[in-house]
Length: 334
Image (cartoon, rainbow, N blue to C red; front, top):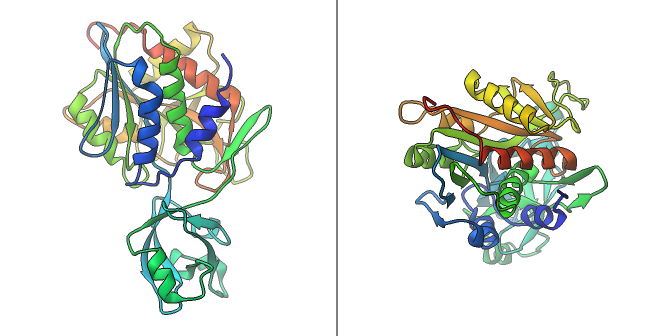
């Protein structure tokens, strides 16, 4: 199996902030429509694909949305002020290029501030490089959502760009579907919306599908960078199997299942124990009477920035895990 550079690049270059995931959903639907039995979009905007099978009902999930900024006001000088959609740090936005869905661009400027440790989004404004405030109001409107701009980069080891969280998760599911495995489980692939502001898409779709097993594919902070994060997860050591994060302790039966799948299929893996972040799995496990849910994570440096970094070998290990879940035999009492 080779890393699909084209698929990764094209997914990462799509506009798809929280609540505005339509372009991503359309791309994925076109890519997989000939490989699944049915595909639809629910009322929340989740894209759901179904490959029929006689076994247990298994949901594999990845979220389509990226961090965004909603324009909330345009002042008398034509400068824009924004509110954050998701955990996007104010200091990461300074001097960033931003753009709307229609392609209007600007740069995020920081007002003069003596104590930068107290920087918030209220201290930032967008200069749209337009001299007339009236013209700015013709080009952009309150309520529009902007994203930062970044260029896709890849070398022999890694890929680097914004919104690898979680377009790489989407790529993993798409690539696993394109491998056309003869599945024995009844497979549902959920490309979810609004993860970055509360995992809302996963909550509604999991309630509707009521699976026997829910596994999401999402990024994980690593301990091999210099930010003081204490975790053994590192780039190049394989797929992460989540045991804990800031929002959930994963059912041990699910953790053991995933470790067993990796061992049986000779897939490199590492157990993720973290006090940071969260995934769609934490809301999925809370619906109905409780769903067995877990996460296969992709080790990622520089999460929630314009240039996240992921190892290509780890991505391939995650694709193999997704393929193995299509045929894993769950116990009758599962």
